Length: 335
Image (cartoon, rainbow, N blue to C red):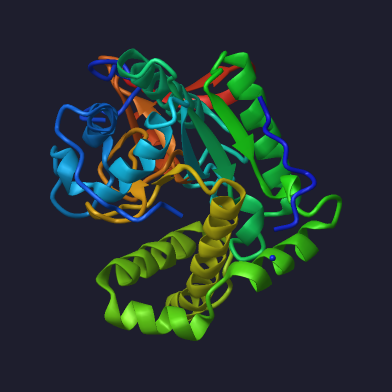
């Protein structure tokens, strides 16, 4: 279902199958939950999918922020609400993706998230829901994707959720905020209300390794996603470094808006996050790169049925194209 907030104007299965990953503003933290607590059991279901650039931890005690966020729901006996900014739009580079609409990567990822909620229901009766907070509109102009493509992607995402019967997932995007104003005005209002300054971000990049790593990752994506730049490679890199600060600033603005709209939630991220961070980075599908997402890649299914993310050009060289409902969906490895 689509979760509408149009009037807002704020200032897995026990072992993942082949479709899932192969390993596959919170209240102040006051105490560490016992290893047998319900919040620890819930968190243990997420830990195999932790997206991080460092060493993984299997100990819930290393994630006090998430334990506290989950406890807000378990203490009240309510379904746990996860918020996940992501699923923005497809990369504009045709060498990376199959088109501008969701495909097998999104289908498998959404199914994985729904199954994860189902698993949580097995250890905690009220269960869980995930709110997919599509962030494409907030920085669409910076990544050179037209709003019409972002609208079409978001609409198809909701159709996919409904068509696959993924009843534990809801959606939220910029169209649900600030009424009927145009996208440019909405972007400006959200940015003015929430975004950190570029100067503050530059200082963070210099002083904080996590922010520096995010900045480098976003810059790399922008370089890879630019398919029609007329200048030199070094000029492209300079331009993308400037755009990366804007993308990060607006992404943080979007996250803070979500936190205002949903002050009680377990905050997920598709970016790598260290243990102990306010957000929990979650991997959706297997990929060689910890930064890979379904909207920057295509799916290659191996001969054993396993799904792996990679750039379209590589997947195309290793398998045959498969259509679903008449649209390009994924590749199947040559048998």
